[in-house]
Image 1: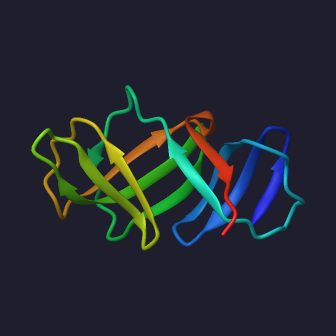
Image 2 (image 1 turned 60 degrees about the vertical axis):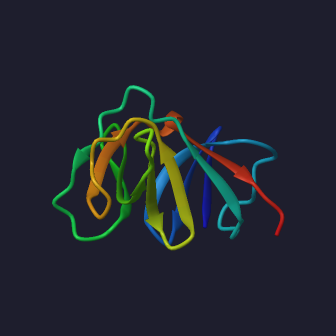
Image 3 (image 1 turned 45 degrees about the vertical axis):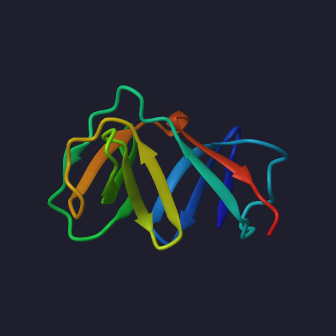
Length: 117
């Protein structure tokens, strides 16, 4: 579900609730929309999380992302899973596979792109 607030939108998904920059024509508030979520985690520090499951949460100053490190490639690129249908690649992660990690990013570090299914 999308709630439009200027170029930033508040969204809800299987992983939780967040804010992100919207690309394209703004959707109507309350509309269910399929999107691609891009994350800019450059310079953000991933830390181990005490949470028990992946999630997205609005917090003061940004969005708290908790993800499962699903795999770590030979070049230290980690595959992070935020929900059953949401993956992200992160360069240079030291967390081993099976670990939950978290980071807080400003809403501008998340981008939503509408996709047609």
